Image (cartoon, rainbow, N blue to C red; front, side, top):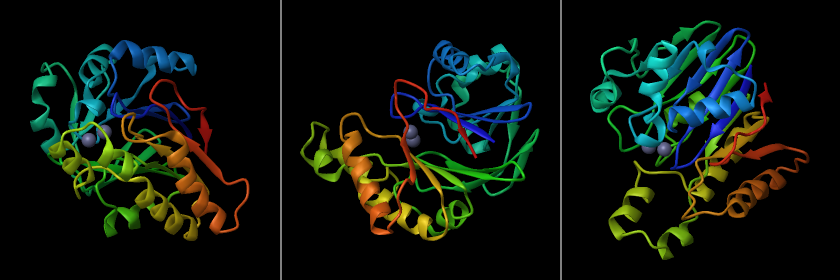
Length: 257
Ligand SMILES: [Zn+2]
Ligand SMILES: [Zn+2]
């Protein structure tokens, strides 16, 4: 399986996953033109997409979905709750496919296992994606890592893990109190220390590769997110562990798992 995080953060999220001829986007939260550009930069033709899978209706995950789906004429996969909350983004010409939030489904050679997450959206999910040989876990937009989420993620070979904010930067930063409360609430986003604790538990279960993601531009710094996770990795005595950070402005390298 090949994986590339095309963009990550509150300005827009999209993850490209490929197995052979099966090419799928998980979320498309950038302008259609920008996603097209970033896919081309890694050598992928947008018309070859086989599907777009949507995690939830927040605009940083869905804003480009309608236009891309109409352009490519590929199906859009989402829960009914996400569709209902995002209905205005669709024009009736898209090929919509529903999945239940706990029911696996397949697109070509990739199997998707959705799982419910603790986030302030209508019916939000993350996924473990399986190509028959390896598994990719996606874990962003979660206020807390539930037992269910952890169980699902613990089977992954690589995890794209939210490390959204530094608590002190959030609390002393410019956001209004209500927004601060939302971000750090149980249905908000994952803080650096919570992310690194989760990473530690996943490493203990055998996780070999992690990409930190959905870093806040306002309430986090790359070095803070990295150092929280690096200290957990160091405490296990691991050297050369595969730790990366996904960016807002440019795609990651293509990971092969
Ligand atoms: Zn969200
Ligand atoms: Zn988000």
